[in-house]
Image 1 (cartoon, rainbow, N blue to C red):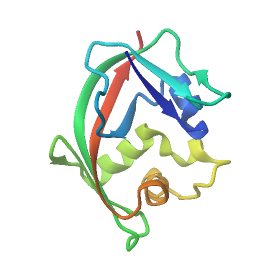
Image 2: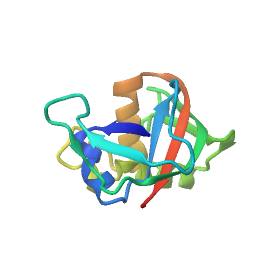
Image 3: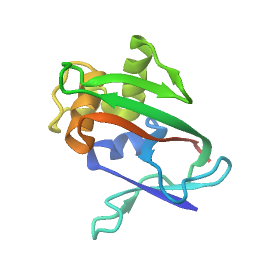
Image 4: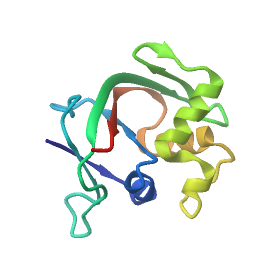
Length: 142
């Protein structure tokens, strides 16, 4: 079984199962389709709490590339899943599904007018400029 930890800003969305995927860097082992995933906030801290019970089931693991630039107001230059680039509208929908809708991040430090802007600010802050290659892990309720 594989566990993933989420920042506090995503916890309500993960708990409500409105956020059903996560983007992660490559690591030794990610969840595999068909196996349960444990979803936490604050893992490895005294404030750790499980967000979903029963554990959801991994439905897909796909490759993802995200290009980020500080030269654009939205910062997210492009997103490609399994090598297929998303169109402008699809990028906004992906960013919303990933938890960055303005209505979901109010009260946190993200202040963009669109989900794409918020995700761009988050990625610039946590990953910097450049191209990120990793995995898109998706799940469904048990």
